[in-house]
Length: 408
Image (tube, rainbow, N blue to C red; front, top):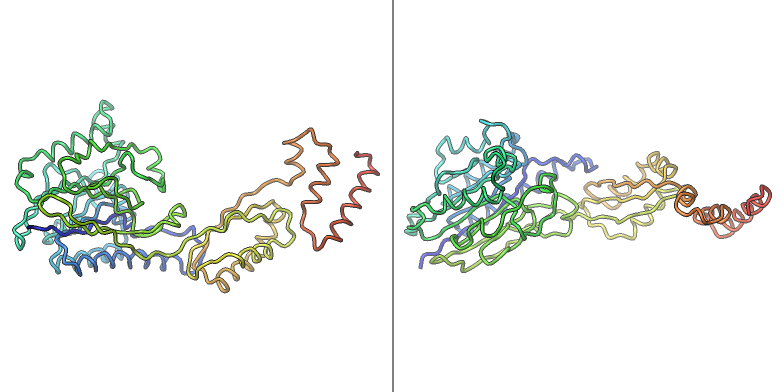
């Protein structure tokens, strides 16, 4: 029995910026988070002596990655190839050049004829056939990099749907007679499949068309390896999204990140193992109300004390405030940052602020049937006070003043 061993991964997003996260060492720490997980995936490929590593797009977050990111990836590919692993990669929407004629720098490895490394930036005209001589096996791969829907509209002059265009491309390549004489058939794609669970992290995915199960020819292929959707999932028994390798957005804060080890024997998947990656904790405080507070920093500290925040995590601090409380917060913000960084020892935080108008104005606009006196007194009662005695005294004085000016 001939058994093909492979690792399927995607969406490294090396070089992504985290400048929106406040913290002294965030950029370097997050860079290392991503690099560590990439290293872990390649380590596992070498340890398990896999035949193929499939990287389904968005190795880099940009089409013009930094030299550091390029050298890092080249080093990992070199380690794998030296250990007998064949590496096949396709371009995703992030690392595919947007300008005609431009090239992803991974093309340099292809042009240098690095053995057993294959990279597809554009749609191929034919399948990739790989001979695994030590096992007397031939593997046929149809590699489908990201296809921009705008390009499809231009190429077809608006006469064909995105799904129809992709069906035609995949059907043409998968019908190649060379695929009739292989031991395993694999489709690689960077796309959004209809029915997949999608968290719309990137703006492009909001209006991006999906493609159908029929389009990816599930009846033709033994294993379908997909990237682009960041949530690990099995769409059916032969269609898998590996997901991204680290949490990028707070919508992913409770999500495990994985990659896939699979075995295919005689055209059948005999094993699929989801291998979990270690990820930095991300969590949100939930909305903390400091409206009307004379000392919002102490309010925040008291609430944050009650929340379990793992050290070195990334925190989303959600604040509901008014303009007065926000001015006080901004003035003494270093106090809450000292608490977060030195007491709670977080790596960084993102501030999400919701500013609301004071209750009097809001009530007047929202509920004009309430008497003005009641609106004013309700507002005064909602304010923060040192103690109940002070609160009662303020209400008494307010009622006296309202009586004097004739507001009943």
